Length: 260
Ligand SMILES: [Fe+2]
Ligand SMILES: [Fe+2]
Image (cartoon, rainbow, N blue to C red; front, side):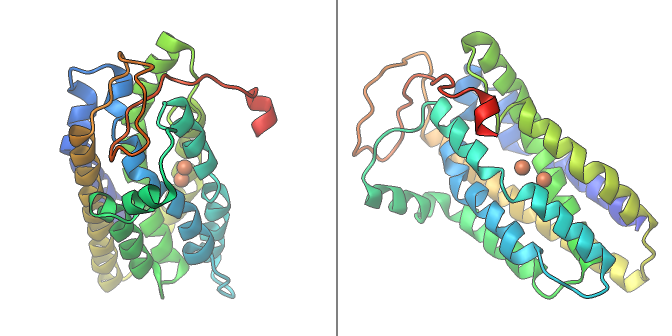
């Protein structure tokens, strides 16, 4: 299994070089504007909680790896409220008609979000705990790359404006860095597998990274087509517009201790 883990890290290194991440690192834009893709990832981020609850989590008698999967899902199934919290704080919470929202979330510009959830569901269905852990590990490493690039932008925004971002910032990043890496890595590294399983797991890893790569391309396309302008704060958002015009950054209204 160590070879499968090495394979995940090779894929991760290549994933970190994708154009979205290069753009996030080096676009000549204010940090907040390098998060212009944020609304575009809504469908997948919101669905990820359900993927944990309804797809990854299952009762398999006597499968200790599935128990690890289940514990993992209990940690990962409730992060989406923080995504929504930052959605507001980043100024994306502008009024739109309900049908505009649905057109956006189920439209052409966001289809890789839905394809990603569908592909992951298909891959996970029918697998045992050990294979699920491999898939989770690959998913977590894609997340580590994305959130690792978002973090310095969130820190810069916080420094500049005082707005604390829980999903984009250290709070979520530290939580994510803690849970996959420690327990699951060592259990995975110890697992003995056959040559056939090894080859199959590597293919699964490739498929996870390939599906997420398509998603990052969609996020970048969206960011380039819908630039925000954090300098032009207070620009009146148009409720019928097909794109977001950012409102000004919104500080915390409720102390974090009260929101869990
Ligand atoms: Fe998370
Ligand atoms: Fe996670």
